[in-house]
Image (tube, rainbow, N blue to C red; front, side, top):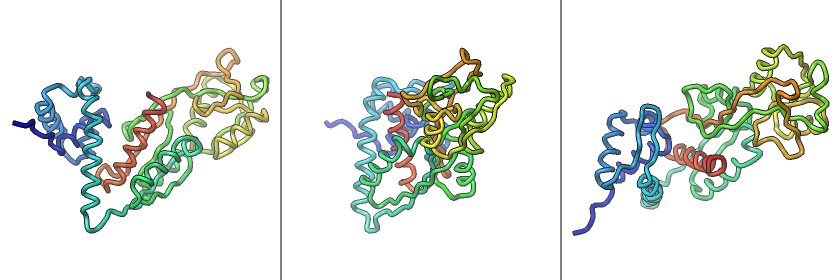
Length: 289
């Protein structure tokens, strides 16, 4: 007598919990109650004959058996979706609007979007590059489906992808830090890096002036290299040619930066969920692996 096959519905619930590290967020995505998702995962564990998740009051983590099954679950769900699309008389055609900050669009995100377009040719993408505040405002107005951006103060909205330090970066020998008032190269307002830097300088009683403003990382790097001013940058945007300054230079400590993904609708076209999952996986491989 053969083994029973895994239920695709249960695999989908398990996959959502594993991706979001939360039963609550997975329930929102699946349009189910938290108890229903928990029951589905429990039934899958019974089918698997092993615990798949370790739960506590604050987090959800995969067991070794869960890690193994997650890879199969992704493949099964992908094949299930591909089969549905191939047999459908009306292939899915969805237009997804994505907002992203310049530091992401100037590095790894375009490659992820390119791979997605090749895999799902029926889905068209529209990308808007701007600062985090304006992108989230546009999402609130229904103009964007997905936003990937940074923030310096965590909130309940969105899902954190990874964290990294916010640093003071300058060019040359760093002597620009001795100028009074301190010259700054900043992204335009509203910007979490700008807000964090100005708040830290105000708390430290340090006088400052704005020497350069650019909406792009490339523009700020140019201002830094020409020693027009120092800039608050996330660690992955700092190049080897820059000098990182800290308390030894009389500068205040800056907060940690969170990069997060926001979805306008938790339940919408499958293409939106698929591309959000692709972005999460690419971020995990690049920054958490």
